[in-house]
Length: 197
Image 1: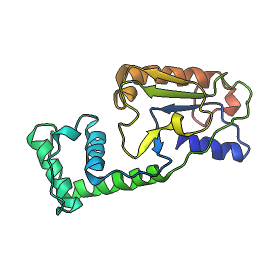
Image 2: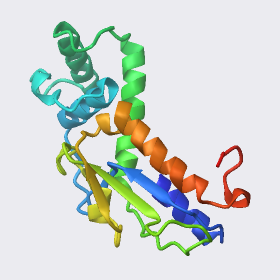
Image 3: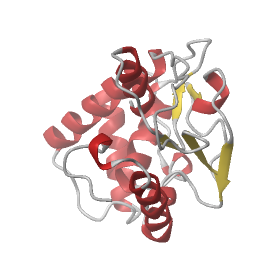
């Protein structure tokens, strides 16, 4: 989203001072879509902020509907104590539908390169691409890391975090300081409304 927005803004003649992408994944060029079991592991992983749930999901029969597989996975994770509060089936179905739609859009998305014009006060490296070192490149079937798919992503900085911890706690505070430092170097007239220097 951030990359696409930066490209659109530049096309409109609105310079973008910097772009930060954090452990971003996009669709594989070969368009490989994952099976529903893999999508369920991804859904519950995002819901619970964990990347180790696939091994805890029950084996389901080929004759089961996606809805039945979703409920079986939920019930199994709840029984194991990995889900603290059981979700109502209607809410679970709604959340999974949103996740599936977003996943399918992401899998079909082909990122375009961003070649920024250098506005006044722009950092030397306008694109900060951060990869979580503890997230393998094939963690999300159907997706690949953004910096492997887009042309000329610039330098990639790896941090000792996983896909979920990279935006939490101390890591989130480090990212906020980095973005704050970038924004403080941008002339006040060019800052987004409400931003402080």
